[in-house]
Image 1: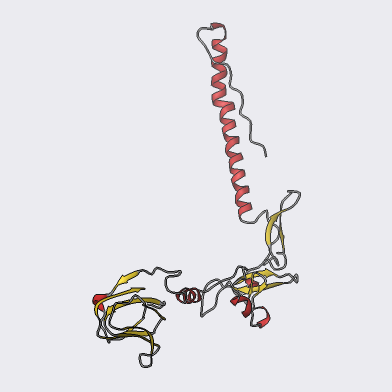
Image 2: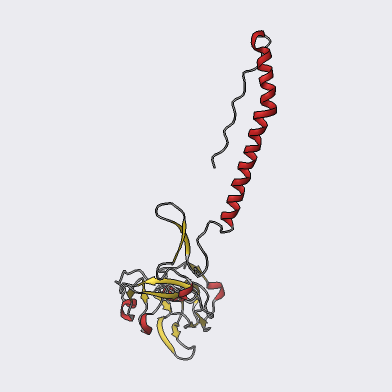
Length: 261
């Protein structure tokens, strides 16, 4: 139903035009108490009808029958004539994936991928096809040899623990915040120290007198890695791997002891 048109108002009654004043004043009174109120009532009925139609549509009065349509979705017909309920395309369902997503593989079939597990809730970027031992990332199978190939540039996922282990295994002074530190005041001869930094460290020792520089994997069996005999020598610089022990046995004086750690 189209909106009722507003009736035109009569010309104004002007005292400057006495010939039309009386007729226009009477027409205005009749308009105000006749045509205009009638139009207001028509507008009210039109508004009420529009509200009822909107409510009926919201309550499904204009929707297709809902019986037997569970799981379907509502869309507008291609010709725009009205709404329709249609079945979802195959695979267009999160429920079918078991609280996850559906993935279309190169073979053309659609399989579910679980995003959460009881032990580790969150998105799992790695998955294994068919229970095999090699993980598949973005459709690319990664073997153990490929994971260890330093020249392989294929994008992959690396755990924080493996990344940390790789960085900690770097040589002293490479890939981490290490700096030379003067530690003479906190070191003593014939006393063993352990490298607990998790990284290899570099030790520099010089002193006048006879001394032997040693490193041990367990603090029991020692390996000689440097020495000096009765004079200053700049050659006692050695690497201590993570967890290893080190010491300087002797009676040197004028000691300087520094460490890159």
